[in-house]
Length: 105
Image (cartoon, rainbow, N blue to C red; front, side):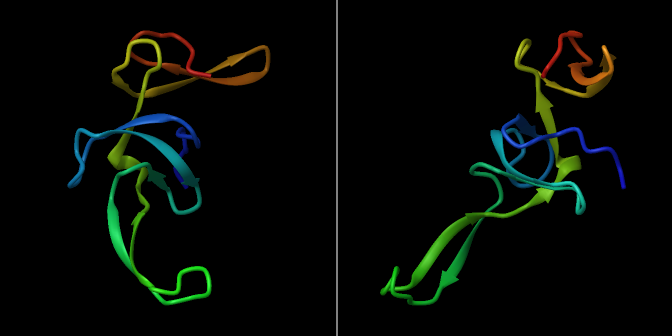
């Protein structure tokens, strides 16, 4: 399993696929399958059955998981897509931007 350096709530930039160039926020992260669900990225229509909550049924748009290699973390300091460097500070694991060198966490 590869190192997973993107967490829930991070701002990311999509670098591959049909939504290339979009800036989004990570809603869920699945480290075991190396996938992330991003806000308004890879949206698909899902047919919903009629239920008591939704008596009409119909179609609902949902974000689908995309592979973590298709997104890049956006640095909160320099606002550029960047690779992530792991530093150890006082025994704690801290993510930092490769471009500007400032801490992300």
